[in-house]
Length: 306
Image (tube, rainbow, N blue to C red; front, side, top):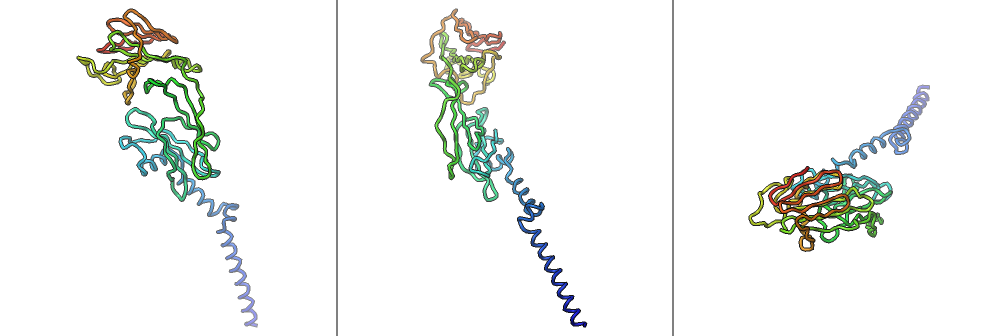
């Protein structure tokens, strides 16, 4: 009897152990975890956290791969996230700042793979980047010959970047915003003051502007002042048709002087006008006003806004 009881007991113990092992294996299986919320779900959350598409993540990878300008401490201007490199992919598109006040100068694309953000491509282009479904739309301003850096007059164009299975490929450019109807230059008789004027695109008449500056290389030169204060070789003053006059940053902008050779003469006592802007030339300097009464006075020595 003792022997039979022992054998039966052993069989019951074996069944208990087997059942326990089966439950343990089921709890650790992927199917069980996905249905019951076990271990695999915890791993997915951790992976999602490490592949975070954010300005902080973008800054880390840009600095780590030395893709930023060494003079820029905060290189990330904007981050665009999406499945741009295939279904279920995680892609990060980063717009990069340039030094000083140059704004965006480059953009780069990264794909999450093997537990890290991996570099795919970089473009040297200032652009507006948006999602077009699973594609990337790149929109840029069009500069006509003689346009100063601040004031593109050719409208805007866009193209689509599509993932072909191995890399991002750009489609053809298409004009999306028409350019300004007319634009050009005028100068005072002395040649010391040169202006660029643009009526803006047809769909945005409020962007009509005039940009005026003082010619470089004057003898004797005018007093040295910072760009934002105006009045020194290459400084500019900008006046929008509905805004106040202001001096833009230098940022390598040549100002209106690229059109000096082809600028028409605005004689003393004469006026130029267009799209709600009016500039009057006088021996003492140039005065420009917009349709809401704001404007500026500019001479070789100084400028002031009103």
